Image (tube, rainbow, N blue to C red; front, side, top):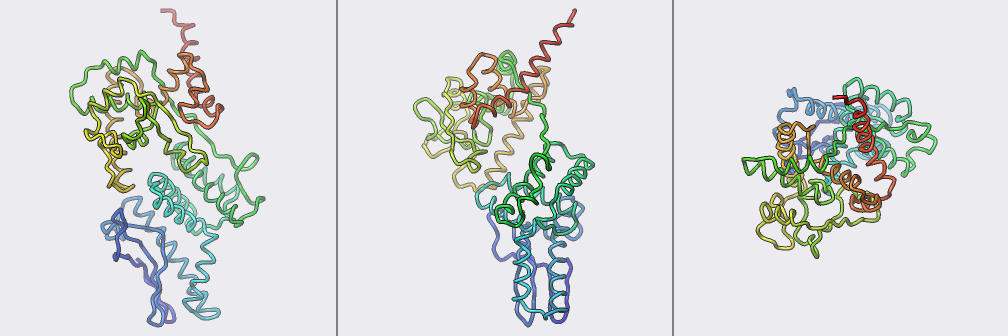
Length: 409
């Protein structure tokens, strides 16, 4: 990493290994030395020791982008040092005042503050999305960006850049959605005016892809359950998928966090983690504990039914958020792999954990269930969300029926 000296001021990048964080990473800081005094400024970047040691020569894309981000911060401080030396004369107080003043208007600084906040509240997955977004934005801009720099034209150019890179509609939606969240905070803090706000109708609108939402029929689900499996891993993966389907299409993150205390009076009560921090009113979802679900719990569940124990024995109460997230991802990855193999053997389209939720909703719809009940059981905030959710499946069903008109043999 660079080292810069001017008129008795020394600037360097410092890897602070004094106190490891919970995920065994250490913060990267900028160290400024002047008149035998040292002050450290956070970069917002944390690395493992192996990542730090490989940083200067790595060929890995993610680490190269991290190195570029560190360099951007270094260059920013260097310019402030040069300006101070040239103008009123350098002082630690003057430098800190400049950096703290600029920080509130910096998109990069705002992103890293958001990422730290997400980590502290255990939202590791969302934090990773924000990290990927700022890596992409910093690479595209190649300089620090102020809130006022994000205009409609800038967003259009950035979107075109992502398309040229081959990013999917979903990825583009996540990246620009994360940026919009940061811009929203800037609007609330009056860093930009309403007139400068670039998002919304008639301005820049984030494109949403319809995506491929596969919903299975009851007959297909029956075939999955009757398909002969050999290994316990295959059987467990299939049963976990089926449990998700039966539990109102619960996602695996919420399912693996269910505890025995959530079973009350023959029902499972839970709140979707997706809405836990994003809505003021936490909507409780209730799923009937069917005999098939009880059998799955008996077969694969935690033998110790202490109310505070997780129903499925993948997570433990002493795990931190990072380890929990990694464990859930591993279970999802394995389940997707095994369900993909089953779907291939049955000549179905590829099945994943996500298919369970879509199948739950559409089986109810096709069976004549009231849409208000479906909305309630999915945890949607209003009926329009459910109607939009089901719309793509109904189009799929119409296309299948229409194809029968020319099925002459």
